Image 1 (spheres, rainbow, N blue to C red):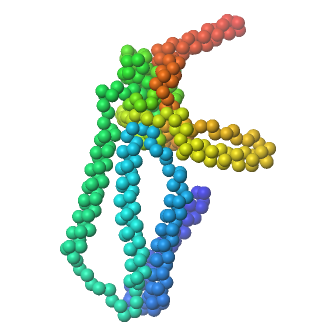
Image 2: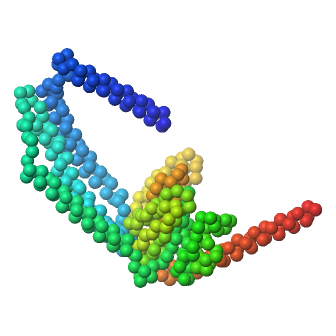
Image 3: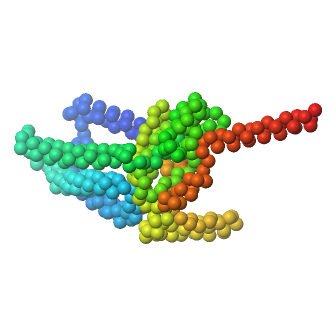
Length: 375
Ligand SMILES: [Cu+2]
């Protein structure tokens, strides 16, 4: 692959030099230009027709993509603010699409219609105040409208109301995994700092902070449906990005600072698996897996198991290193009761540390017993 890229770069560089030398030659002496360098009517016709054909092909390709790949888009949002976000995107895309279809279409059509002809001279047109006013003021109004609408949507989404009593969860990113820390009974996260990372304390929790003792560190995120959640994010090493595509949420995770994002999940994992969209998707994935299994069986290898249900995931959306693609954490949205049951099974930070110390003690003892036996 690298060799291929190098060859392409060298070839493009050679073409650039060649073209530059031609321009240089042409500009040096206009009298000596041979007539084959000047576009004839035939050349202009060919170029005009190609412009039109390219324009039509471009739109056919666009329609084909819409037709073929629309079902790959994300399903309806699973969060409260998701619909606002999707609306903003839809309106922005519709405006861009409308302008793009007209301007790109006209560009190709005019290149075809007004192609060069011998003896025909282009009209010299210096300026027109009215026209310039129109094409300046319309984009200004449309863009200002989009930006103001975007700002309102953004501040709506980012506005965290402490009175809603959100569950506070810290997300800790490092190459290449996530850890979650629930704020525990008091719903206040204990302080943390990268300098405190040692042994079982993989998130650098500050053990002198009493708020930290009831925090709960987990390898999965469980969220009760319809209750706001406030994520506070830290990074141990490089820039990461916490991305919850199905909840339409994304926030950079920056070393040395805490960033946050809040949303309210509205669709449980079980509910989204009941939707037609997800049933079709799971069936489609299983179809692909079965085809692949048949191929594997023919080679005498272990077939793939079926994909039984869709799960929400937290992904990293910044290319943060070699295993970036695999930086993910499962998210389960469930009912309040299911969430409480799960939470009751989790260990508080103080218990986790006690268990770790006990383990170390056992190791030490068995180590000294061994030493005694050897003596
Ligand atoms: Cu990452």
